[in-house]
Length: 185
Image (cartoon, rainbow, N blue to C red; front, side):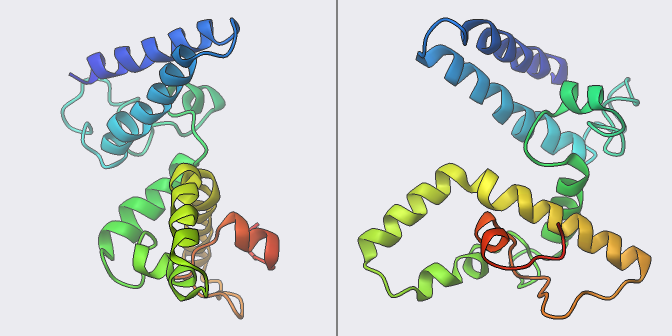
């Protein structure tokens, strides 16, 4: 089953890469987006959760501690995405799943959108804001926030104190990177 999914995903990548040089049209856009989406949602997500640790014969590749980690080739072949796999493992497997629907859950939408909720703006503007955020959240929110969680986990392991003014439950986004000083970068 996994080999079929990987094969279809790779086929989408091949079709997208080979057809993107011909003019702008829908085929490479759909093929490349399906490739990156399937790599994350169908392959990386299950592998990073350890779903194939005990059942797949290739333990060197389909293992949560080895998938997309260790070399540029492994990253490119397994999960070529905006997020670092090791950062996603910390953010999703540890922080998110162990703190579901709590303030320490980095994916708690009620906490992450409190600025929007409290904003003095018309409702139509908030709908547009959410629509744009839905199309760009992986770059504007998820990638910098997973990296923040990776750095926090490293600091905790090393026994370092969290810097003054840093609230671990606050999201780090492109907006906060541009408008404030963030010690994670």
